[in-house]
Amino acid sequence: MSAVILALTAGAVIGLALGALGGGGSVLAVPALIYLLGFTPVAATTASLVIVTVTSATALSAHARDGAVRWRTGLLFAAAGIGPAMLGGALTGRLPEAALTVSFAVVAAFAAVRMLRHRPDVGTAAPVRPVRTVAAGAGLGAVTGVLGVGGGFLAVPALVNVLGMRMRAAVGTSLLVITVNSLAALAVRAGTAGDLDWAAIGPFAGAAILGAWDGRRLSAKLPGDTLRRVFALVLLAVAGFMLVDAVT
Image (cartoon, rainbow, N blue to C red; front, side, top):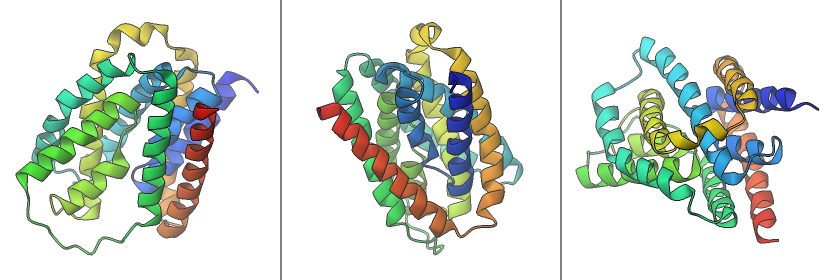
């Protein structure tokens, strides 16, 4: 199977997950780039940031048209993550590939567990705690910078639990946070972008964008909990495979 077909297929699956679940799908981008398209872990995290940025920015525009983005709150939350995202982006190239793979596997497993333990939004607003808000934003930025993931599986719960947002607004606002953090991390890695395989990244990103639109329609037809559990189990399997691959 050619690299372009693999990129289109992987991008479509990840886009479907993003559109249907509102976050978490980008966690599969890095293992897809490594094991299907032959990227190194460092190159995969950089390429993933490109894909995440383009996909999140596109999805953000749709959520903004629906009035589901809290711009002021999202920008404040994102501001706390810009510095850590840039530091994380600079740190990635200095980490051993095995350490990067293990770290990613741990984060992927954590994302899967969060999805399996998902609780529906009950609309209860929590008091805003500035210290926790800054800490959550900084932590998300660091994860985005080092591992090249959007972090929607972390951003959405933080916006709901720390800032008291309803789920619909949290999903839209998380896309703003993800886009800002990803751009910050990419700014540090700009010098290495020329070495990437753009012939694979382009179709991957394009398919992810189209898949995200289909995923939004799919979420209206199938139970969200069912989709979430299936995706979480797949993510756990991927995390386990990456962990075994890194230590053997």
